Length: 307
Image (cartoon, rainbow, N blue to C red; front, side, top):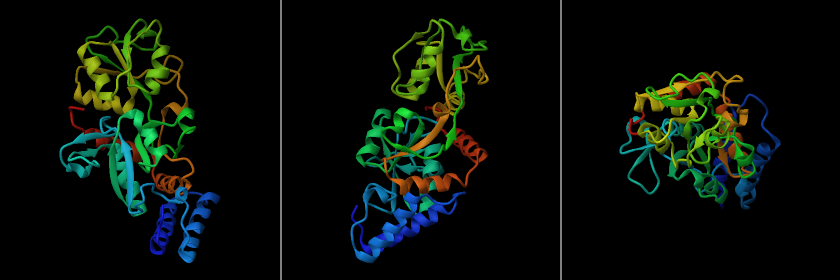
């Protein structure tokens, strides 16, 4: 990104403000980024692209990718009610927990939010190519993804929940073992589908669904007996589908066995963009788990039932 002297000075100021909330001393990379920005202002040389907190060439805008089809994390709606943000190249708007978080981060950095709507498999490639600054889309912080992108600290912690029909054969299941023989599915490219479903004994695992709404439709229509997802998605589903039951197996030996990386939800960005990573982590450091849960409850309360 090519910045004039005045923009470089503004960038250095924004980064300093964004890191005030951190509970620890800024990293060497972050300090170097600020020094580099100041040096750019003095010498008129070009700034390093990876040191900038945005990747689209506009330091006033945080460009964020998400599915806009994954309530309560994110969804599409027709107006700007509740503070929804217009989707790039669309007349529709995006809202949900992820949009709320994006706005909070952007406000702290003195930026505006631009939402880019992409399908799930296109999110990481968009970050890697520089088309967007970051992805805020309910992504688990997995080691596989971390090979391609950098992640912030967790911005939500999502436990695993099983959804079934109230009148279905698994409504009284108390453990993963009790789901034995179930026909099941979940969303494509998620730990629910890749890690959890294979743990069900003798499971009939259907092809993965493209979106979270699609997997809920599969359960509602009777195409499957079981859907595995995370707690926020399950809570949202119970609002939209009152015939569903959410089964929580308690996280012990009788539950799905998952790692921290499976349930820690993070914000991904291009590798090497330490300025943006440190700025986002500075904002997250000012928040607590209770803050996250309060925001998620608010998102669930206003989500469209069609999601």
